[in-house]
Amino acid sequence: MFIGLDIGTSSVKAILIGEDQSLIASATAELTVQRPHPGWSEQDPESWWTACQLVMDSLKDQVPAEMAAVTGIGLSGHMHGATLLDETGKPLRPCILWNDGRSGRQCTELAEREPKFMSLGGNLVMPGFTAPKLQWVRENEPEIFAKTAMVLLPKDYVRFRLTGEYAGDMSDSAGTLWMDVARRDWSDDLLTATGLSRENMPRLVEGSESSGSLTGDLCARWDFETAPVVAGGGGDNAASACGVGAVDPGSAFVSLGTSGVLFVTNDRFSPNVEGAVHAFCHAVPDTWHQMGVILSATDSLNWLSGLVKASPETLTSGLGRVAGPSSVAFLPYLGGERTPHNDVEIRAGFAGISHETDESALTHAVMDGVAFALKDCLEALSVAGTRIDRLLAVGGGSRSRVWLEIIASLLHVPVDVPVDGDFGASLGAARLGQAAALQTTDGIFGKPALKTSIDPIRDLTEPYAEAYGRWRKLYPAFKQAGF
Image 1 (cartoon, one colour):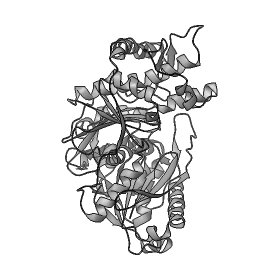
Image 2: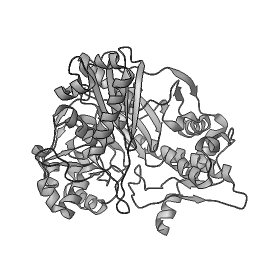
Image 3: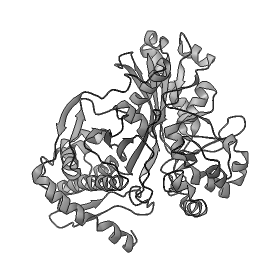
Image 4: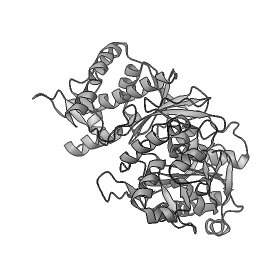
């Protein structure tokens, strides 16, 4: 038996799977985000641990016999969060999250002072990453910075509470900007640029390797027969890739969740810094991946849903089959954008609204806008030498066939739809826990059964290509106008 623990931004989810990876039980505990100032986003690390205890207690209550037989636990979590601990392991301040935008000035200064962030680190210096967050603390909270003995990512703080070990995996740690990503090791030069050293970093392990074992008191609390090993695990997207079997070079998926991700597995480190492509280590050994990331995918539809007081399902089902692009255009930059613009200041907007524009046209425009933003990601990946032949669709938005038809026709690739599209990072985490317990990756990371495959629709490809050309002119226009 194996457990996957996913520390998300809005909840902690735990699943228990069997030897055949069938789902036996699951539990979820909600989390909240604090925004003490505009552009800030924080969470109390203790809330993750409280939630983890709740979901693990729930699994024990649901299936005590199966719980007792667990031999491996895997972890996944939201990336980039800066969790600062003192020498006793106590958090010094709330964690600064992935979607916190306060460190824009520090990003500019770090990039100018140390170009190795973009060569060794392989990514633009963005406010979302961990390194500029620490530089912000160094400059604005010097008393906190001086007491910082260890910097952990969110899931690695949970690992510390589970095992007493300071450890991190390659995929999540690559998102700090302190790693030499090609060498899969910390970079002394990049750490020095923010006043830190290896002493402030956890030891690194592969995601499918053991990072330690559960402590005795927790084994007693949850009635484990033997202390389960805790796998290195992975950042949320790398763990999701493990869950859908995207671990071989060339395999790819599109995630339509709160944010949107175009994820491709590589056999080597393949950055495209200029296009704001994320190039990280994968959660399995000797493998890397690229991501194009947009910040508001289903979040854009959820925003419209709240505005017009209709559920996202009602909005999308009301469209029927689309005959072409919407007459209205939408930029999905509600909280800025990553790929390809790396622009924390840009904001969303509609263009082409008329007296005839109704709820359906706005819904269509939002879905088109997200698809166009994913096309931007594909273009940026192409510049890095990556070719995508087909995609697997995951996330809540993948339940909309219309949305997937738009994406397939615009990106010119078939889109495969799993029988169950809700392949969260928790399944990938559980698989990594299984690999660590069995000490092998053979046969662990299979692909899901497919419900259907959606091919590009010939009558849509040319109209959408033309609409994309028009849509691309909106970002510079909005930027020039100061939006």
